[in-house]
Length: 165
Image (cartoon, rainbow, N blue to C red):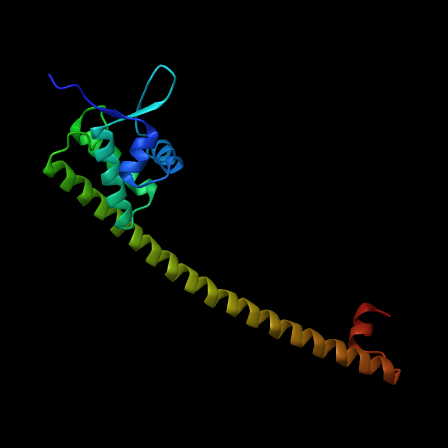
């Protein structure tokens, strides 16, 4: 029986061409279950490395860690096991994960487009509000100018009469 090989974090980082802190970040953000020894050191199996390679491919395709985590969790539910989803994955499972990832990317693009349209609408509404405020300020300035002119002439203004002074 062939004994499974495990890699320390420094070896895994070198294999994947990543920094060690990036591996720790991916483990935490993607909720990966990486085996640890008695001292608490991470021990990466070949299947863990395969999972991380898949994650890197998905990141290269433009997915963020949240989308990748959702794709991995979905794949895990479909597989019905507690292992990392890419562990010993078949081509069909990989295609399924990529398919889910594509759907997430499409949904993300739709949300970004909706967000862009909402921002444009908000800008139009802000311009309308600003325009109305400028009109109000102009009318107030006109009334104040009329009142000042009437005060200088010594006559009681319509505003003064209205206030009873």
